[in-house]
Length: 185
Image (cartoon, rainbow, N blue to C red; front, side, top):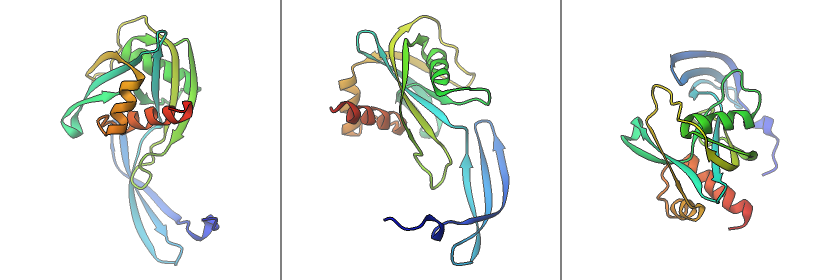
């Protein structure tokens, strides 16, 4: 599949935000398809996010349980959050989100991978980082729409849950499996 990208590209003729709310917007693009036909395409746009795989000094992983309204249940997974307009780099964003959601701070942060998890409907970009030497140093600083409980587990437990399909949060499962592949487990 080494074809030229231009023979598949759509031309955006016009773009309009049709709905705005806290957290995301719905955009309509008027487009011209490669065959010359025209149409509209709707998608959800939101800020890029960082997903943190945080290891404590003794090798456990800091995890969260968070209420997720769209699925009506508590979600088990990794801390994550959106980049803000003034965020200078991923490391600083990851450190902030880790501290706010869990009260933990990291000695070191390294980038793991970047993914577009659902690019047929969303323009979301998830930047994955691994945080090392995490230590609880503060209380959580949650947003008004966050309900989060913090705990720790082993990486093996997370990897087994992800492989079995029991780590239902896709962002978290992808990060765990990517890290396992990178370290050769």
